[in-house]
Length: 353
Picture 1 (cartoon, helix red, strand yellow):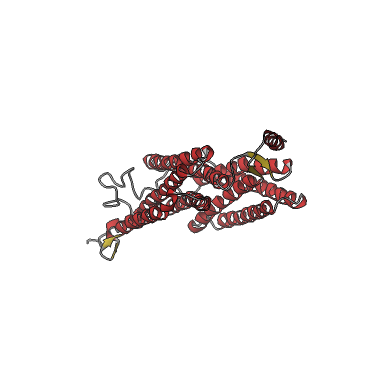
Picture 2 (cartoon, rainbow, N blue to C red; picture 1 turned 45 degrees about the vertical axis):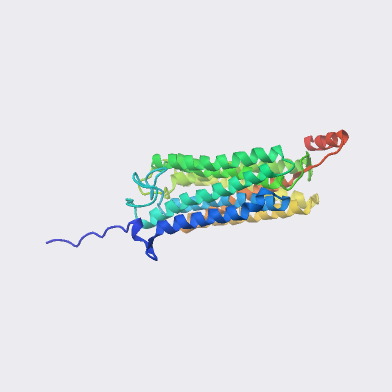
């Protein structure tokens, strides 16, 4: 007696749209996106302050967004949808003849192609910064480092594949995105300001409290990475996991989240009571809203057993909280142009208090 044949997993090249494999459409979409950016960037050859601000904001968005698509790769067990790097398979840069299911290959390959869009935005900002007149050294340094960080992301992604999705490399991949976002946000804020001396816009203690949120937020993200590396969503069924107690590391992460929430409340109350500038108060409200939303989402996903779609939303929430922390921090001081040595000395004295 012979049993029925085991159905073969649908290969990536078997997903066909209008007689073309799905991966062809993914490559074409990426190419169209890059070309569109280049066409839009024609004005960057003679950049204005307005155009540079928009590109800087785009830099923040795409570098934050790539972390969310990376989370989608992980929770759908698509981390080894392309089993090699920089190629997708030992014989091809595109997902042809992959061992994993078609959907997994499509998700991982799609995330890889998005890296080119992120890099394109970074290069555009770099070119625009070089063309800016008068040229600014502070912006040039940041605009140079950001594309290098994106390339570093690609390298870390390769290490992640080579390590069979070890949680340390997966976490490092996400953490590098977080660090690059610091630069993109700093660039976005600085390109809106003149060269000059840093001057606080709030009371000194409020500035210090907002500053404390930055390392605290970073520690919170690292704790979340440890929880992720211990939990069930490793990017592949065979991916190694850390041997920590999941409930214990989750409690540590939750405790840090509550500390962050308490400090966010303190900053908001302080901003209101001291009548801080309206942008600072708005940013403080946005931070508190994002932290509370993220906390609620974290508890819901824990109670429901970490469903995949909630994990992706939680990663999205972490990027929103992180950008809100950075925007609040940068909002508590501003750079002002100085025309006399006395004014420069006064601004520096105010910044040091």
